[in-house]
Image (cartoon, rainbow, N blue to C red):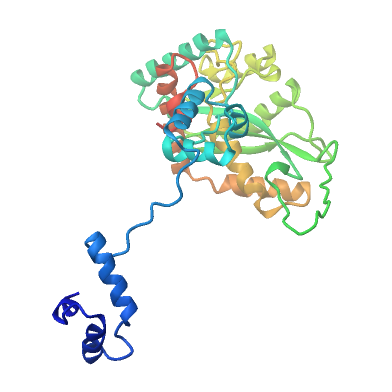
Length: 349
């Protein structure tokens, strides 16, 4: 620009002078100089103006308000269904939701169903735990939580998450046994580690149903010897409300050992029904075991048992103490929710 005005506003003279300073290959030609100077006189700059882009045809203020009202009335409606009702393209509705309304697709969290009477029972239990924790500092750390779980040999394949990419459909079928081989495992979980695993099986090593006789046999022959090696006098024992757990003979057996220091249905301290979110076996142990046991893809029942023993043996005491600390956090959260679902635990708020 400076050279242009110094050359008497002559494009040819400007080009000749620029070739002397910039070189023949780097100097612009006359048409370039003429175009740049015209742009400068019209806009006051030689910089290319940013293109406004394609005019928005669907994301108008009116359509944005229509989508906003639709979301307020039915937030769970799908984009496809919403676009059909509003007579807008799916892509337009998706852009309005994302960029204009700043909305995000949140998944529904699944949790156990609670009946009306469960709220009061859960609140009574957590209040009792908190009272005992104030009177005895290590109360929660001395509770042994127990439960059984099934481990199938073939694991579980979620066909919704399994995709095979290709130019043609391979038409692959995954066979699943009608009665798959499995093992039934019992474990006790407390701040001092994991007691177990114990497998409910017959003399041939086949999994059997847990009934009262087999459950009490496990207590006498497996649990009692382990407790004899624990040098703590005020241990508590917890079990859920399964029929074999709450049978009269089982309650008498537990009372002989723990007196009134056990938590169960038909005991002095009731375990609230449908409270898998409060027991470490359900909210930690079983999920952790199954995430690692199937990693090596056990092929036989013996391999499956060995994997369970191996993973259980690797759980450190520090981890168990952290899980029990989380149990107390859940107790406080359950009290805060008046015995309902623990939203601050579920949604990590």
